[in-house]
Amino acid sequence: MELFRTLLKPTGGESINYSTRVLTLGSCFSEHMGEYLKSNKFNALINPFGIIYNPLSIGNSIERLLNKKLLAETDLFEHEGVWNSFSHHSRYSGTDKLSVLENINSKLLAGSDFLRQTDVLMLTFGTAWVYEYKKSGEVVSNCHKLPAKEFKRYRLRVQEIVAYYKLIIEKLRSQNSNLKLILTVSPVRHLKDGFHENQLSKAVLLLAVEELCEAFEQVYYFPSYELMMDDLRDYRFYNDDMLHPSPLAVSYIWEKFKQAWINPACEPVMQQIKKIELASKHRPFQVKSESHQKFLQKQLQAINKLKADYPHLDFDKEQAFFENCLLER
Image 1 (cartoon, one colour):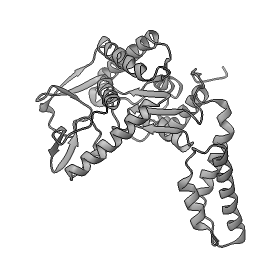
Image 2 (cartoon, helix red, strand yellow; image 1 turned 180 degrees about the vertical axis):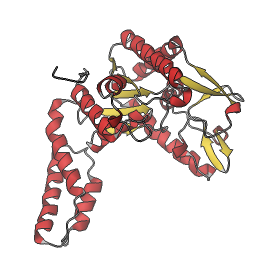
Image 3 (tube, one colour; image 1 turned 30 degrees about the vertical axis):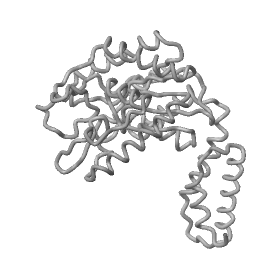
Image 4 (spheres, one colour; image 1 turned 120 degrees about the vertical axis):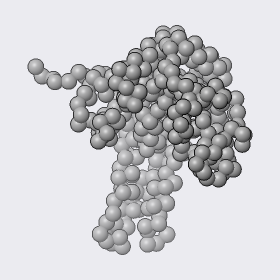
């Protein structure tokens, strides 16, 4: 027996290149893939509402972006001296109400404009369990540590998700007929729901995604869940909490995503970008040495060449770093 693993080879469209606009929404896995895209200088926007786990809240976020529906002061609530939004992750929370609102709405406007021109929308569903705020009947994206008694907890049914997303996808396609959707299920177990409940939740999500892929053209499934559960089925691929994928596992899944979805013609550019990124992390013993100054000049030349070929690539941070290290400018 040559292999002690269940190897998966995901398929995709190989359609993402350096002119593609990619929007990622959903759980922390969408953040991981989005960060890899951004670190490779792809035109990506990550979670303008912050991390969201359930399909209903992700869909509500999409509708807000489509309608440019800004939040009002009345949409925020205060808890223990902190202002929060039920539609947003806690990273948007803060002690100053107006600052919180301004930050939320500026990200919403940017996300709305980006979505209208997006080529690929990647959605990552984390759990089918939702929390409904009893006072308003609203399914929330985040409970923000309010008492559990203030929420009704229940699991979405497959047909609820499918029916809602059929409407969402039709709305998206009415504004952008060429939009491609990549649906994936987060490989992170939600064990606070319970072991069995987590399995049921993931099953609901997988069945819903399957129906949506069958119902629409250019809606695809990427098996991040299976890659973690079946290919990397070993505790060495988990973080210390034994729930979240380790950096090595995330990197492995990114490579699978790259093989399935990134146009192979991008690989030489990605390699050049990687060299520049590594060079920016280099810390020499002798900053003023002639050899290091030549090294800095070489990096700036490489950046200028890439920017000449791909003007939209953002090297502002790296360029500023190298220029600041030069003795003569």
